[in-house]
Image (cartoon, rainbow, N blue to C red; front, side, top):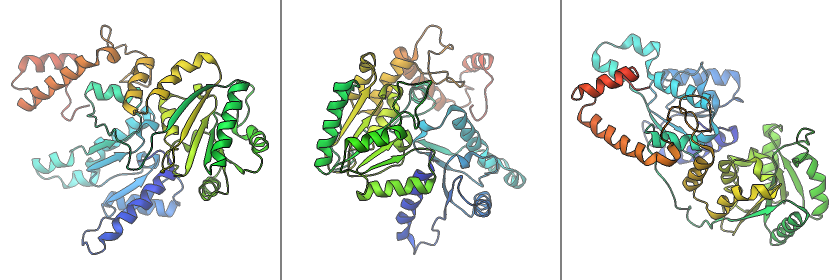
Length: 398
């Protein structure tokens, strides 16, 4: 499951290419793509194939968590860019995974204890994110997830150089000079804006649509394009095609480019009003450049000098887990059991997760040791009694 249709299509096409070499394999997996744009008739056929098990792999967007989608025997799920899913969306997805194998068809077929345990077996879950948001990091520390860090850049990648600049007249003049130098060297530039149209409520924010004429005038001889969420899928794809082929040199966009946009020779990104974006968002946006062999730059333009300190962390590091830790210190881990994404946990009146996380890690190791010795806690009756008083135990976990 991925957050955007564009990324779902990219994964689907890439997977089909990988499977092309399996023509001689008898049990070649069948792959389907299910998104909000899938035609109704085709969508019904795909949902039926998923329910019967005829389709063994499905790639999709939020459509996969719809009530109408039932899995025959879901055994593994991968959530890409999982930080883009909200708390409720992730909860619905987890609920679907939790109940996925226990649909009515399978319940009718249960005849003994062994098949019952298989029917209720929860699938494996792999969640991937370039920058875990503080809530995700908190859950990992809490013991709900185990974490693997991939710290190396892909082969041939050069680290992106990051600059923090105050957005006054002199700062913008410096940014334009840097952009011109990049364009003259044959590079391509992203200009990222917080909003599409100018807003009376937020007059200090620059808007992508309003700036198109200004930037076109500033960089005569170079073609400018516009990309934002209100455009149709066809319009977005056409604009990206022109940017890839070099028909467009400067792409003015909103955070719609954060996910699923791959233009290897794009070599500079400028984020205006960058204080309006979260650290995770800025790290993701920065990842749109430096995808080829060309040295790349990312310029974060802040509206005021007071915003510069928070952004400095991005200038100092490109390590997603370090940035997540810093975000955790700045924002707090959020309410693990509710909808809050930030703030300090009311459940912990003494400890603070971002400061005392090492205690939780020790506790998690101790818990795993106990469960490996006695998965039902029968060897630890006093502990089992205490836990049952605090919160009723669930056979499959909560």
